[in-house]
Length: 169
Image (cartoon, rainbow, N blue to C red; front, side, top):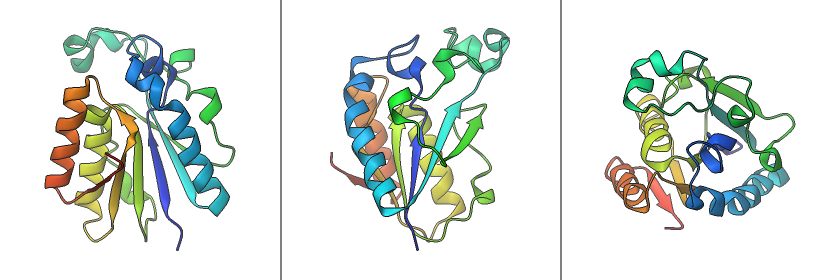
């Protein structure tokens, strides 16, 4: 059966917008190549979008991270244009990890890439491992960036400890 690529939050605000970093900008070409590999094989691609509403600053997350980002419908909320894939599945998630992965039909390997390694990638990887403990789950470190290089590395170590395969470190 086909592999599934889950592209976590490759949105403008996390790349070069309100929460962008040079590390996030650096991985865009590598992410684009990874997406092309999956497209060529006809594998499934799922994009997640961090999705907040206009009242974000009044939410529990907004009070701890008081930087407006990924407000539904804005340019910052959109997936980077060069990464968009026609026919892909798009999941709008209101928090770090999507809690409804069991609604997807995964029966083979799952690979995760995207932003931020230390928040949304690790959250989704751990949820997926808990929901699908028998599936091989891989994270491509070369297609991920964290809030800082140090927290990126820490998140990769956490995922390794939870039996998630890390490649291209």
